[in-house]
Length: 171
Image (cartoon, rainbow, N blue to C red):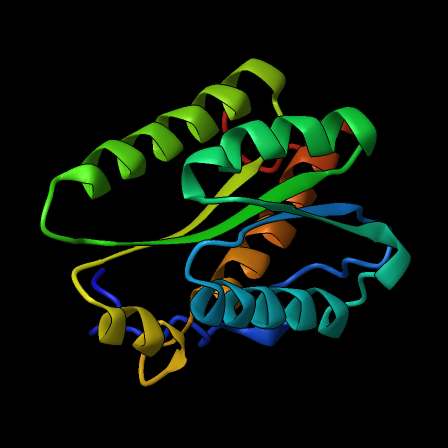
């Protein structure tokens, strides 16, 4: 669903599991810092709101969005986290660089998730202009960082339930 039709910060608080025993990694791109730091704040605050301990949240900054998958891999090598949230912003410019970066990040995170069985969360804004990015970094369409944190909590809980043999549906 397009974020213009859904607020990225809207979710059902009661449907999330407690995050008090979970460990998280957050990898943040430094490129477009006004936007990425707002995404980080939304993400970090949401994790804390749902019980994550500050000591159980490990953050790494990388130069740009292209480096998010590599940064995520380095973070996991250092900290055995339940889920890794990758936050960045690629704004379309005069060239097609955005397509290459967006695809590379998406493919990199999918490959990491499949290869490791660990959730790597795609918190990358892929906008046409800076205003669209600001609207999704705490503006009129909410904060993609909040959505990424909620996704990480849900996926970390699924991973833990699977380890404990608590599958509720499926195979």
